[in-house]
Length: 269
Length: 230
Image (tube, rainbow over all chains, first blue to last red; front, top):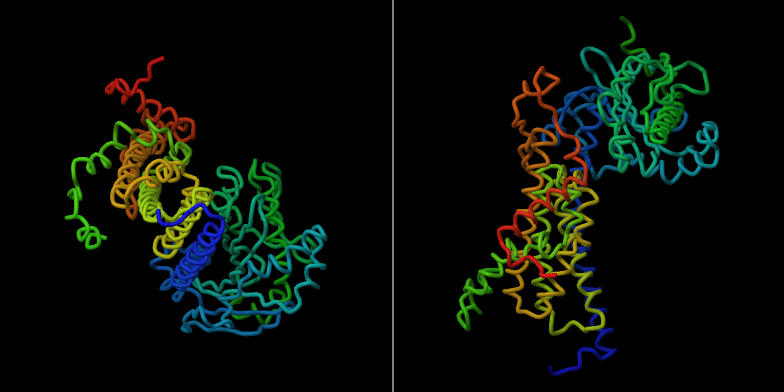
């Protein structure tokens, strides 16, 4: 060996060079694959949105189905005023920050809503004053002659984030369908929120009017009425998370949902 | 790869000499990473509920073991002894992150299923074990073959365990890109008036260890040289 590879200076030099080379390689990989990964994430989101209205799509068909069913993508402010509206036919563009489809509700939840929810347990008014300035996306679509509104919901389960989409009928009260997913809930317990037996319970339920609690997920096995569904036994914290997430989000959309001009279009029987 | 190695090959022994072939065939049986070296047991029980996941996991581990062995072997005369474990970890972790990113971009469904397990490839003892035991003291080409051999040894055990577990536990076999194929006739099941029921015990992690134990049992009764003398 021509040099002493155990010399301290060489060790330092070696580790420095190694870190720079590996760092550069990883940064390059991440950048090179980012657009493909983002496209996959968008496809997944479309699959989930369509899942809320009972349209089964997979990654390959997501874009086409999304274009077919979703008639309008809307962004509203905290008071329910429409900020921007993208009609059917305008393709989802990942580089267009104005597109309601690109609003990162998970990021808004983590940065703004979650701390307030934690600090003021169950107090929606505190959340309502904290979210001024945020944009809220919703999707309008037409299925089987019905006009539906799909609202994204985001919250916290036991181990990590949970999210989903709730579809409301054109009266703004009746739940047409729901779809949930999670990052890391316990398999067999909390993770069951994504299964059909749980989401199908939401179908046909109604939001309460005027009450502070619009909708609730009650403890597994407890009696339910038209404004609540049965939670998952053994998945109590996750069920509570769904309860909090659905109730809070729908409260925040009440400004939009209670304005009759947003709903009247197809209410006539 | 082939062009680079074929240039240096004529200098000495042929690329697939008997010794080099042994590097691939040995880990399949006599020095199998799971049943004889007892490395990588953890992932063998975590990932063998479905054949599909096992295939992807085995493929990823094989690629990473080969890559890790090759890179470390190239650097073996440059790596300072005092930080060699750190260097090994950095190289392996970088390779795993690249594999993870590639899966996310081109196999998003598989990537979702594997989720945390991809990160766990880093801690798979086979990779660090082979680097420490072999690649640090051998030339790149044999190291690459050693990685391939051990990866394949890991693969067949994983596939064997996963096939049994999925067939008896779910009554189906799933392949990448083909989804789950129900192999057992539906009318056999009690729910459809038959006499058969899927065995939920098979799905639980302990059963993977029991199956690996059975493979070790069979292997040692066929190959008595593996039995230690007390």
